[in-house]
Length: 165
Image (cartoon, rainbow, N blue to C red; front, side, top):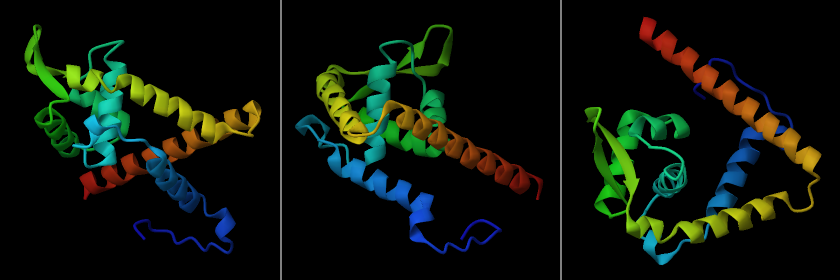
């Protein structure tokens, strides 16, 4: 275990991390993969492509945005984006105000799968929420966001400790 504290779990039903991990695996299995997406070998590549496809409709997207959204390191984002570019899903275009900055732009190939992705997201969201009252879903979202914030805060704390050693 990476942490300094050990946790004694008496009942598996209280193992929140295990339940979240199990749910994550179930979600991955539910994702329908269209032929155009077959060249994407990891779930991270699919998630990043989906993010770029939909966020780019509203604003310019850069590598830093991907790093922040998925809480991944620069090297991981670079590797993922290189594969998306190599497979023809995105291009990197220079920005007029700063030639060092490259905007991530979905290609026509990527845009061709956008509706399929939207349909799949709607289907999975409906499936997840089936039989659950809206007030309980709201509490669930709130709790999951707090858990994510807790983990992010702990990561930052660990980085600070490592930086000072």
